[in-house]
Length: 408
Image (tube, rainbow, N blue to C red):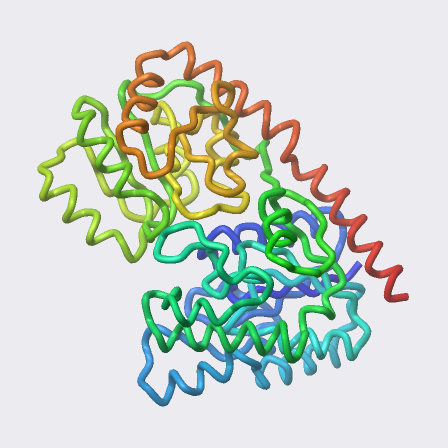
């Protein structure tokens, strides 16, 4: 098959990009041809198709005029539609697989794909189909106020970064795409990587055809280590709101003999660093961004991984990676995390936002090396059995063949 793979970023920026590139690699290893469609960016990987990529836009660093133009692009990008038409004129595809296309690309490309009778599959990496701010939260509190298409509540509650203007654009975007254009009705199948996301979308009134297919991990590329440095734990991921990092730091304040490494970058890093310094904490280290072997070695040296998320998660790759490395995870049950972290088997569960509960769970696990090893073995076995690349490939190809047959 020849598959068009669309995602707004063409470099490793977050979980959706890892899923995007992993899927392309998986398909190529099985003999298929993948062609990317994305946005130009200085950090992009090299691609023979980058002449078809849309121009770069950074919504956070532009003047008033630029923001107005960008807002229109959010609604409908005529540039993206023109670029995809050029690509479709030069290449013929069996199926298009869309990932994160919101804003910088926009769903305008769906019209072009359907005009050329290309079946469309879309992987969902967040809750954007029913929530204007992606996260099912209002000011870091779980929220379902936009249920059944009541998107105006995003504007009333300033759900997008506390900004009335940004919330207005997000609200209008949702009404434009879902109520007036109904553009997502043209997507043949939506892939939900977690049962939580699939069920929540149905509950919120989403009518698209949903199938469950969790993310995968190339388990054999991870060498597990079932022990680590005594009294050392790690968090790795984005340092942004909703990740529960204040709760984690507060918990570590009660555990001065245990060392925490916080790996990653994000908008909350400076504030969190200052908070830890103000509390005179010597057991918390901010390492900055790490990747590849450097990141894996940092995780291997830890006894366990902590994921204190407070906003609903989908199917977090960080948990799968921790499991593949033989590490149990102490986590909340936010969103799809509960499908991965099984209390007492692959990790420990604590109440979101409860630093006392978290400190108790960290202390309990650190004091029991045998429990750490047993949970690490369970975690590794869990991803080997349920999240392998081969199982994912077989199901994905079934989905592709199904939509091709439907459009035939």
